[in-house]
Amino acid sequence: MRFVPSTPNGSLLLSALEETSDSHDTALAQDILAKAAEVIEAREAGKTPDQPTTEHQIVQVLAEWTDAHLADDPQKASVHQAELEAKSGVHPFAFAKAQDLLRRRGHDRPPYDGTYYRPWDPNDASQKDFGKVKHHLKNDAKIGFYGDWGTGGEDAWHLFYEMMKHKPDVLLHLGDIYNTGNHYDIKHKFLEPMDEVCRHLGVSRPPVLTIPGNHEYFTKAKSYFHMLDTLNSAHGSEWLQEASFFCLRTADHKWQFIGSDTGLQSYTKRHGHGAGAGKTVPGFEDSELEWHRKRISEFPGRTVFLSHHQVVSPDFSMYSGPASGASGNYTYWNPNLVEAFACHMPSGSANPNKTYLEAIDLWLWGHDHWFVPFVDNVTVPTFGQTPAGAKLRRGRLLGGSARETKATRTVAPAFAGLVAKDDKGDPALPYYTPDNTPKNQLYNAICNHTYGILDLSTGLLNHYQTPAWYDGTKQPPQTRTLKNPILTDKF
Image 1 (cartoon, one colour):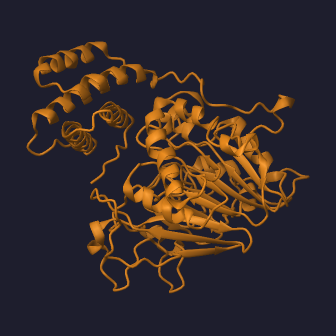
Image 2: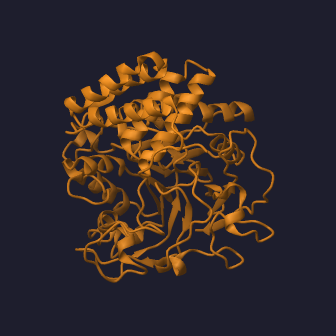
């Protein structure tokens, strides 16, 4: 199984070992990575690996050194350093080099100094068009949506291959390049796989706009912002993405696509300072929220809004404070994202008498590694200043483009009636098998991966599924027939 850590320290450690082992394509390097993944996965589950080997033990000590180093505890770090040196006789190259990398990446700790995030200044007249992509899409363009895709896995490659067959004019990614979104991850798990697929199909890579998730901010998004400056250079300066948020519009101004940055507050929330301090779930920086509201209120056409973090979760609680009036259990909602837009737009806006939320025709998000479409016009909770009866017009969780989720996962009872149905009246979840095979008997017991293609010429957004697998092969399993599209949204 391909394991991706969920904690910052585990992600940093495995990423450092991957990077230092990459130049040594040996059985030893692969064995170290496999054992490191086992140790980190066990640590995240509060366990220890079964029958630990010497390599397991060294990784365990290195993990403890990593925790101490990133927590600025030199006394504890020195203890683990001595343990590592005592094992120097069986201390392969990767451990020492990874330790050096982790020392250099020790900047990923508070206080956040704001070096890399690029804010909009509403008082600076020269930034009037900041964040707006200068290029305008043709009116009949095709847009590809995918989320949490940057794993570098074979199944991620296959999904991108299938998506590119639709010949999209632009690709919009919902964030998370694993494990930490550093230069190595961006090159080997994001850019190179896309380019390899395009070479295989004999086409050029289309422009890509991508927002950061929490994993890019595990290294303060330094490499992510560096990537933005050259990501679409082959398509000219009109395709420059200036910031971690963006606005892309069609030539006829009937559609706009807005990307947002919730990753920054996932970082500052974790460290308890900055705009994220005291928050239980991420939201937007104040200046960025004002920027998003201006883009929505000034635009008369359809708005598709993108965030990495979810507006609502199908199966776990995000909020424990007071609220009322929600469809389903209000604890499953993100109050920061709801309150950001569940308020009325100012007079003189392009859509008067509406909330910003009602002006968003479709909200796509990732972070949770699954595909869950919610029914239209779901009433959101009343949080603070949220007006009663505000609705999410159409919400889609699209974070399952490469990360695995168990096929036995189910939607919480509070939301059972809020999941959109397919043409057979069944929940439109990526489980389909033609012979009604029980979910716990699906291939490798994992859900299919998903992506979306919006065709502006027809106004149809088709959501497709591709096989998910993690057994190391380069070919997808042939044991399933996938129903495609799994769901079609009509605009």
